[in-house]
Image 1 (cartoon, chains in turn purple, green):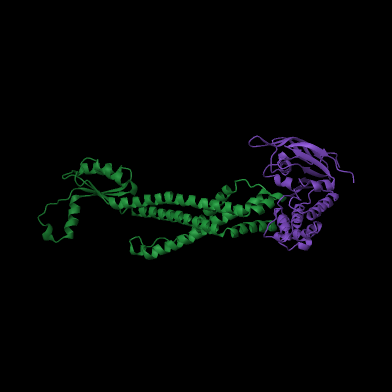
Image 2: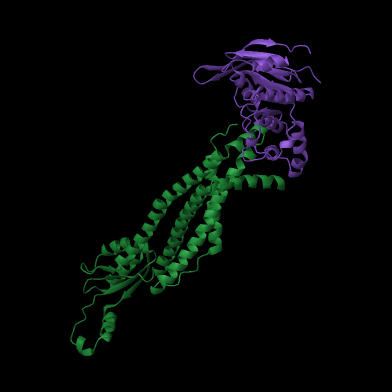
Length: 229
Length: 291
């Protein structure tokens, strides 16, 4: 164990064409095992911050490190190594509509090089972990929004990543399903996973009382610590 | 390893299955292009061989002025032999030629006629393409008959040359156009495959699949288009050669073309098609794919 932050931003700037600032001097540190909400209005820089971490967007200046490794060091050929260290849950779930629940997870496992035998062994366990095993044979359109989100989270777990990044995981869900998904993320966090969530769902953010980093115009305007349990 | 190969091949065939119309169009155009190139190349090769074999038959005759003396004949023969493109020069003495002519007719026809033939040369060319320049060089020699001068089968030789240049034009013009069209079709087919499988590609990139795993199925797709196109082109060439041989060539003097080299043809056209398909699909996936 080291005291080194697990995720670290140092004076990070992201400029888009047309003088648009995605991030404007962001500095933050997230420790291993933390549960952090990134909040802010639309256009505040939440998605940019997440995309810099997943290296979908390159930061213009500054340093972004995950477990001590500079994210900018990864190029298009090696970025897959970075992405295997994290689970990414996109806002739209990105499920394959013509594949069943188990196939969605299995396909992702096959894509990263797992054998058929490993897939047969591990997919049921992953589906159990995200509490969707009972719908294993359903197609995505037959699932509720919360169930779809759990499949997307399950798929993000295939590499057993230490970090899970979710973009608006409750954005399209009703309160009950939001709670289901958030409870699942809390459970994963309790198992040791670092969780980073971009959200504008303030009731959910306030209910869970975790660390909140607020962005506005690409700058951090608030960084409040988690509420003691 | 086998597991990995089966996944990547599965992805490639899935991409093909989703784009059947473009698949057929791309394969058909590659086949047509290679058929044209292969057919023109094959014909060109045989036309060259044909022209080489006909070179001896395309002899030239050069006639000297009346009353040319033996030293003049010898000097002219020597000069002709030195012209590039000339293989053999035979002197045909006028007396011997006249004896041969007289033998063709009844004695009463030629009796009393003074030998009208001049001293002549039979010239055999080493290179049919140089016939015109050889003729011009011979004509320029002194002591040659200004009226008869040089006679040769200029039209036949030109026909052969024109056919060869037409085939050249066909290969470079129409073939080039088809090559471009098939390249665009393969490119489009791969781009459509990338588009139709964008969700899968996105998932692959989200979960950390390597660039190799994401892109190789599309390269395999282009490889398959090119290879199948090459195989079809070989079949089409074989069928065309058989059809031409049976319907046309057996009625001509050039009947009996050598059999189409089916195995070398298959190998060559498949390799050319496969490489072309790979190159076109590689260009198609150069456009960045982002999750």
